[in-house]
Amino acid sequence: MITDVVEDRLLITSDIHLGSFSCHAGGPFTRFFEFACTNGFNICINGDGIDVLHTTLGHITREVSRLLSNLKHILRTQTQIYYVIGNHDIVLEHFLSDWGSVRLLPFLNVTSGNLRIRVEHGHLYDPFFMKHPDLQSALTRFMGIFLHMKPHWYSWHNTFRKIRYRKPEAVQSERSKDGSLIIPGQNPAFIQAADELARRGFDYVVMGHTHAPGMFDLTGGKKYVNTGSWFRRPHYVKIENGTLELKPWNG
Amino acid sequence: MAVKDLGERDYAKWDTIVREGDLGTEMFIIQEGKVVVTKKVGDNEVFLATLERGDFFGEMSLLESVPRTATVRAIMPSKLLAIRAGELLMKFRRDPTFAFEMLQRMSSRVRQLNEQVVQLMQLDQITREELQKLSLRAEFFERKDKE
Image (cartoon, rainbow over all chains, first blue to last red; front, side):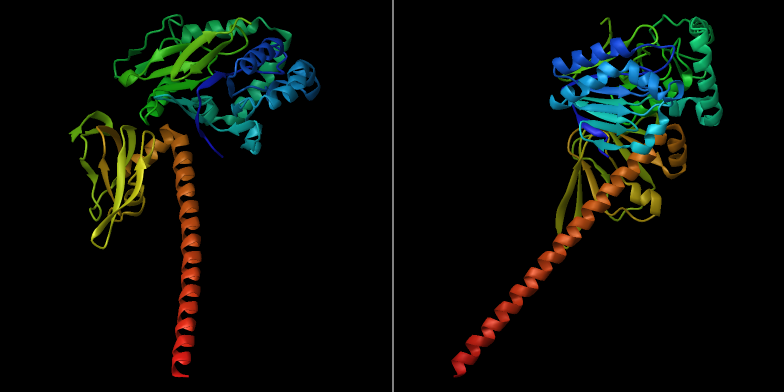
């Protein structure tokens, strides 16, 4: 399994939740995929690309039928797809390997120009997931059914998270009284994990999982980037010849 | 060498980070810069590898409590993260994929060493065959001379 790659042109996104009854990202993501392939970008799906916990084979096949029919053409264009495993598709860990144009990975280390970038979904730093993985999986399944019936509950969940982690629209990180790093709107556990990862010589740590997009400062001039989710406003990271940008996807 | 907070250390160009034969209980992760690994073979110092950002070294002394098996020098100003024996498990807990990456790199090193052993054995076989041929030839000419 090769987890260290050199990339000049790479797009990273996460939490597409393809197949989820409440997300409906199939169409926009197919356009994103086509944009990447026609502009010579490789693609990294940083976890929760396929929502195995919230879907059925029939539903996902209908949602991604255009994407699947395009895959044949895409595979001919030699676009490399890196698929990093998340918690909603954790079952795919059984297939961690290189499958030609698609590479299934637990994380990805990207070198682009002088930049070193760590790409990881982030569920391993979610305290609830690490303590009760089975319970979280069961609750996630339940929430999938619930959101299918009451989609507006997702915005209530977002509001709750914003209140819990304070000032979600602020983009500057700050330090708590005990000196640990806090980023408004983000669970401190993820920021501490990103800080720990960055100390291994990464300039950027790109994660998903929290569904809260943004780019934040870590210690020593390093950056934490979160690509959010495709439930609301999709975001992606564009890496081009040693530069990194976080952009919204409006396609 | 300048020691900073949280195990971070700065080294100037040509500073020796670890010396072969010394006792040491730390491993290092390269945050910035580049280092060279060398080993003494007889009177010569043999080049083993160049390591860059993200690479690590010194794990053998930390894991097995043995003296350093090679010398490592900075070949440009470098910043390293030192992890002491008592901090390794905590590092794995905070950063679990680091354990995965350590095993991945060590597995890769074992595979490369196995390949080198096979190559050396093949070379040894060829050398033996050549030596045998040479000795047969010498024997042949010796007999001919006698005749």
